[in-house]
Length: 105
Figure 1 (tube, rainbow, N blue to C red):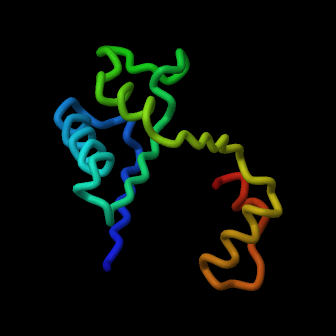
Figure 2 (figure 1 turned 45 degrees about the vertical axis):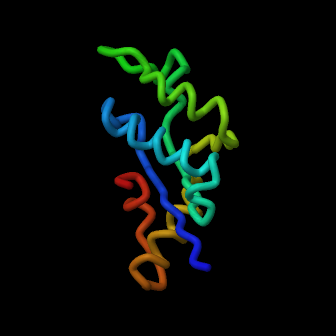
């Protein structure tokens, strides 16, 4: 049996048809029709005043999906300087990185 994982990132930018398609996938997962599929939806919390869409309402599919699925909130904070230096060093496979680069990153 092959398991399929789909990750949808930056979903706060999705339009109506995207949310409707996502809702259809979620419904098929819940019904068991897509028993070998898992779906990860990454989005800013659109029901939060800080992230609510400015020119349209939150799509009802977003509300229905978030009501029935596991909700894991990851609070992203800026890296400390040493972590950024390590990340850039590993990414470019160099022994060291100028700390001034961290200010740019």
